[in-house]
Every structure is written in C-alpha cells, then in structure tokens.
Image: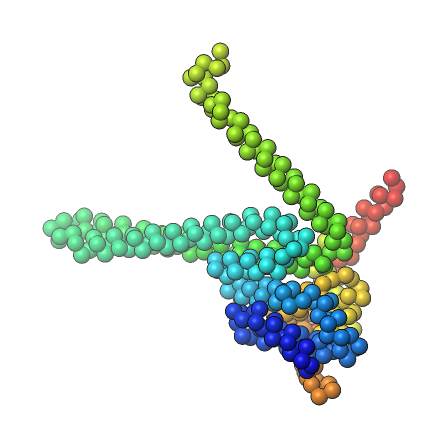
Length: 241
Length: 101
C-alpha cells in the first residue's frame, strides 16, 4: 500500500469515525482493494480518487449504506431518522435530493406519526395500569364494588391501549420499510448516476420554482383573506349588503 | 426508470463468471453511466440478500475478494429480466407512437 492510499483510507476512516467498526472495516477493505486493482490496471491513485468523487463522497455513501442497513435490519424511529439524515447527506449537491425529499416525506411523516401515536398508547397503558394499582391499594374495602370496578377498568384500559400501541408500532415498522426503500432508491439514483445530470438539475429547478410559486400563492390567498376579515366577520360587518 | 437496473446488471455480469470489485465497476461503467461510489452500497445490499457469495484468493501478495452469484441471485436475475422485458415492450410502444407523429 502506498502512502497516498494510506492517507486516503485514513481520511475515510476519520470521516466515518462514529459508525460501527464493522461497517467501516468492510468499506475500507473494499476501497483498499479497489485502489490496488486500479493501480495495477494503470490508473494512478489520484485519478481513481477523483473518479470516486473524493473522501467526502466515499464517506457519505458508506455512512448512508450503514444507516440504511441498520434501519432495514431493525426498523425503529431513531434508525429511520438516522437513515434519512445520512441519505440526504450522501446526496448533498445532487439533483435528486429535492425529489427524494418530496417522495419520501409522506411515508416518513406517516411512520413518525404512527411511532408517536404508539408511544402515546403505551404511556396511556401505563397510566391505566397505575389507576388499577391505585384502586386496589387506596380504596377502602368498605367500598368493595368501587375498588373492583376501578381495578377492572384500569386493567381493561391498559390491555386495550397496549394492544393498540403494539398494532400502531407494527404499522409504523411496515411504513418504515417502505420509506427505507424510497430512500435507497433515491441514493441509487444520485445526481452523477443520472445519464443527463444537467437536464435533471433543470427539471429539479422547475419543480422548485413551481413549489415556491404554489406556496407563495397559498400564502397570498391566506393573507388576502385576513385583512378584509373572514366570511362570517364580513357578514357581521355588513359587507355582504 | 433505472430502479433495479444496476442490481440486474451486476447480477448479469456475475452470471458470466466470478469477478472482483474493480473489474465489476469497470464492466458496469462500460455499459451504463453510474457513479463509481454507487457500486459499493449495491454490492453490500446484494450480499446481505445472499444474491452472491464471496471468497478471497491471493493475488500479487495480497488477498482479492471475488463475488460469485448464488442460486437466489440467478432467480432474482431471471425475475429482473422478465420485468425489464415488459418495460422494453412498453418503451417500444411509446417510441412507435412518437415515430408516427
């Protein structure tokens, strides 16, 4: 291994310092071998390094791959957040970034909403269980029916809320898998992988302009409605006459 | 549109014989325009899905990792070819409509 290769691999390792050791080791082995084979094929390290897009580009792909693999192995809210962040980082400056954000935002928001709803259901289940314990321990035996009623209601609510929480969590995991597929597809179709990057960038530019114009029109519509008052206020102020 | 094409291309190259990372990248980039860094995530994922197995052989005093397609990989390639043939038929129909105009 040459000094230049050692330097490049050390830079990649430094960029990926916070990733699991296994992911970094596998990536470094791959690129170590890649550089050695390119050198044998008559390409200098600088040339290969340039073709690969530099340390940041290599590290971004390694990071995105590690985050996506981890999230696919065990889907969860934090892994989904991590995968989303890393994929967007991997697509920095790419024409596909904006369309990926648009495409992935709906399943992403849906999955996160379901995770939150599931967490709320589990918290509710804990509260219901606490109510049941409260009923058993604090209501005097003289009020036996009230005691049994509170305990039974608490336990029943805890069971229903737990089942709801589990169902929501399972649904969130399913949507997470869909979101990860969208993210992976976005990563695979990064700007430089597109055969017509300039046209793709123009298309993205048009999409961005359309989005900004629509948002501005919506804001102008809302803004226009308020100075003159909402319809019901207009009726009250006699503007309908 | 390019969804799955890179995966299928990698598997098709491996179907012709075992190969190593750099050679695979050279062959892929000779057929379709793709960022070279895009190959590593594809290889990692296909390996995790057991589409190919790997083994190492000594080469010029160092170890070189070779990729070898599995039965599962061949089946996946067969499926991808069927899907892409369907896509090709649709594209031909669209192109024919364009020629008529």
